[in-house]
Every structure is written in structure tokens, then in C-alpha cells.
Image (tube, rainbow, N blue to C red):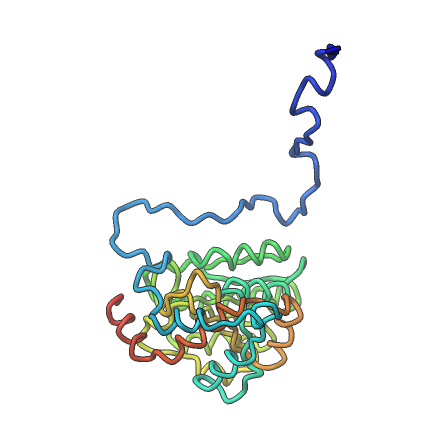
Length: 296
């Protein structure tokens, strides 16, 4: 016998047993106010080279071979970043303990924000800048001071004035100062002497220097900036090395800062395949020079 169901019952409506989230289902943190998920910007005019999208050649055959050589046993284990950190250190600093591999440069920035920022603390940035930096400041609940910097010279004096104002009004120095050179999105470069002047004016402040595009600049400040105790640098394999899809970046900083960054992030930031590719591309110095010349 076939039974008839009440048309008003739950079974009569296939969607009735599905939970539909609403805006009031959860109470988001106040730090999310005004923030939306990150979305790549839509070009407003025609250009033939999108540096933010990492235009340029993909990985070489040597890099692809290094990925293919990753063994099943390596994949089943948690990845070890120490080899890549040592190879980076060979080129930049004698101490591998001053290098931390991260999930792209974004991860290094987010770790830094979590390490030193909280409600009641202040960060000073220039604007425009890489979007993930002010986003990290806001997510930490810190106060954001933005200094306009477009195509003119870097506004060193405005930064020094902001440092003094923060100290005077809050009784403490800014917790973070973030500088991007070459700047994203303008491409403007901050002279090394001006970076040092800002860092020296705030010796108790973490000065984050984003060098994601430094391979395209005339001068690399890394060796000089390593001499300061309050500077951390962020670099990446996403841009000049052409490995954006593998999400490998790294921070360079004094050991106490690296310890903070290790504390505020996960222990296994990148996959074995990503590590193999990044390690292999470090040996391709001639290819890197050709890529940079072509993009410039």
C-alpha cells in the first residue's frame, strides 16, 4: 500500500533539514569590522605586465625535476625547512637561525603582527602599501597610522614626527613600523639611509621591511639592515623566482625576533614539493638575472 505524506511535513520540503547560516549565526570579532575577504584588484586600465600577478617565466626544468624527485617517504613526513633556511643563510647571513621559512611573505607579515600588536598599541605604515599589512594590523586590534607616500621621495620626516607623536600621546613607542621597498603598488624605492633613520628613531619598535620585489631594485639593503636589532625583512620566492603557486617566503631577522615569529605561526609552513623547488631555484643565479633584466 502506498502511503500519502502530509504536504506540510519536513519530508515534503527537501531543504527543510538543511541548516541555512544567517548573519546572526555567529558573533564575529570586532576587529573584522569593515574588512572583507581579500580579492585580487581588478585592473582599471590596460597594461601589458601585471607584476602583482607575477608575470614572467615559470619554473625551469631543473626545478620541475626537483619536485618530481620528492619521494613518497618525504611526502608522508612533516616537512623540514632547515635545508632551505641554511641555503638562504649562505647567501645572506652566516646564521641560519636568523632565517624562517614561511607560507609566502604573507605568513611572515601575519606572524609579525600577531607577535607585537594588540589593542592599545600602534603601527605606522605608508599608504598605499601591500594590503595584507594594514589588514594584519586591524586584525590584531591595533591603532593604524597611515602616512601618504605616492611618487615623491619617501616621507622620512613624516615618519619621524609620527614616532614622536605616538611616544608623546601614548607614553610608548609604536609597536610596529612597516616599510615596503620597492613599494607595492607604486614601485617606489626607499633609500637605505632613510630606512636606517626610521629604525634608529624607534629602537624598541619592530621595523618590518617588505622586500618582496627587491630583486628588481638597483640595490639590496639586506646586508646593511641585518646590522640592526629591531629590523625584520620579508622576502619571497613568488616574484622574481616565479614560484608564486608554491607559497614559499621567508623572514630574516635577529634571533629573538625569529623566535617570536616561530611562536606565532604553525610549525610546518610549506610542503616538501615547495621546499624542493625553492631550494633548487636558489642555484639558478644566471636565470634569475635574466628574468629580472627582462621584467625591468
